[in-house]
Image (cartoon, rainbow, N blue to C red; front, side, top):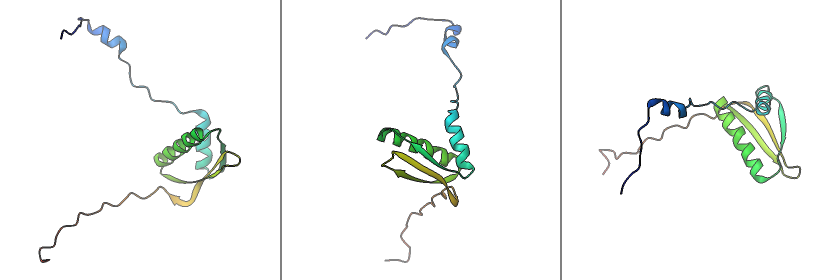
Length: 108
């Protein structure tokens, strides 16, 4: 099966190569994160279940990166997420590694 190709100079490659862009945060979310770090309790409205899930994931990922724990509950009648920094708790402790059980030499 023939493969088509053509030779080009190095500039052709460099024209399309871009440095990876770091996403800048949404200013609205940055305000929310700042208020949560300050210990405020917030109510975040959502329109659909998909919107609720998306906002919950954003909050969870940010909390994990920040090393804090959030208390999150939902007001389903008002379509709201109620979120606050968990009092007296930091991030979740790392899970302990489980040791593999090995047979004891004296067990028979």
